[in-house]
Image 1 (tube, helix red, strand yellow):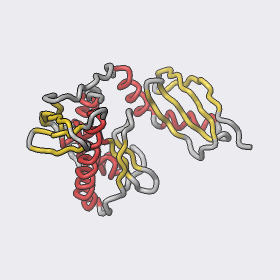
Image 2 (cartoon, one colour):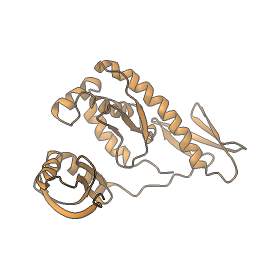
Image 3 (cartoon, rainbow, N blue to C red):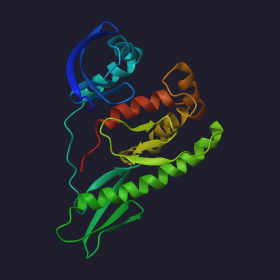
Image 4 (cartoon, one colour):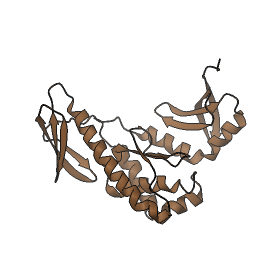
Length: 238
């Protein structure tokens, strides 16, 4: 019978700062780091040595400290009211919602507007999210197809994400996930995140070589990363 997962509070010094973290041991095969409103959480195999776990934390120390700072500064999420006449920023442009009663749910994009058909007893926010996901998938696929040849790679498989703490990811199989909420940010930021994840097809780390690959595709990545950190904390929830 496999061992049950265990969670242990621990403490480590990273770049001169003392950090508390939760270590969760389970049947997973690799060590992983995640940060959310609870702080730093580390998942590790049952038999992983503590020295290896903490070496990985220190190796990614800059990322850990940066993400923890972002969570400390994160304001309470604002709930966006999906009602007729409400204005939502879509790809950097104000977009007005038109909400109409209908027998079947649907959405139509027009210049400066999104028309939502909302049946009775249906949450209009769900209709809006479905429309934005569909639009995001098409846009992300187009941007991946645009940038991938510049690295000499094929456009990778795409999955939409709704993670609260990550804008994108690239796994060891070369599959990329992009957060559909990027659609609520300016196009240049979308491109930065696309380029960031594509660069992982060449460098599966955040080393100087990785950032040089990002710079090939997105020379203004530093400014765009800072803008993403700022604007990403202000996105509405619905």
